[in-house]
Length: 248
Ligand code: ATP
Image 1 (cartoon, rainbow, N blue to C red):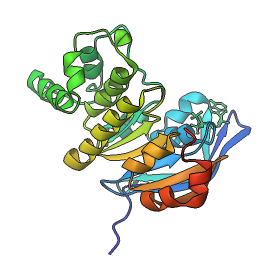
Image 2 (image 1 turned 90 degrees about the vertical axis):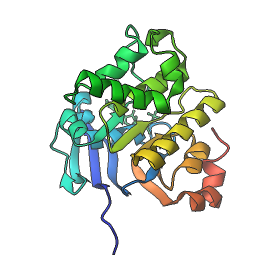
Image 3 (image 1 turned 90 degrees about the horizontal axis):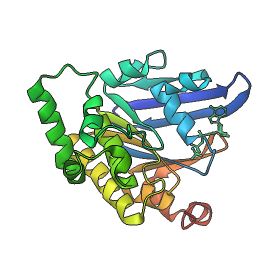
Image 4 (image 1 turned 180 degrees about the vertical axis):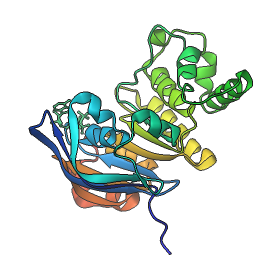
């Protein structure tokens, strides 16, 4: 028997500012414990898809005008982002968004605000983040604004982990980072997936890296899914090779 998907996006349409049709019927699934990559060029609609799922779109004058989103067996499109975090679904926004004037540790602590934790509970949550991101432990007293781009990306992921998510929507984790830092971050994603059973839906323009770490992938073009498949099959597909690999 086939297990129903953990996250399921069903034929969603998104319109910005009441007129601009950006997603034209996108469907995708993430199984429990999966790493799924959403790929495609600039403006294809990757961020919009993630924000439609996390309902953060509402803050940007975007509306889901058709379709539905199911998470863990329930419809979630009417919920607030906070309610979703409480149910285990967190988004790490593109561009990292750490508070520049707070220290790394203070940033991490802001991620626990949806949980009622004792001092001890908070310390345990921090220790877990530091276990996966030893660099953050080293830099915990530094103001985030003075840390490197890679450390800020780690801080953003670490902060979302403080809420104990079962699924993370990760937008463009490789953006602007040197190749070896990108590998480091994707290795941690793989670790969190295999050891903490966190599922991931990641939006990535870097198709080469995304297909190396994901199990399954979707390619978006102009607001539509134009290709989908097992990561290994996509990586060896001639069209994917020609149009998406070796480009970034
Ligand atoms: P990128 O990697 O550049 O973020 P993307 O695949 O994530 O690309 P989106 O950011 O989802 O693409 O953008 C998809 C389309 O929607 C683009 O044409 C973009 O200009 C448009 N768009 C995005 N945000 C808004 C907004 N707030 N209002 C109007 N149009 C928007």
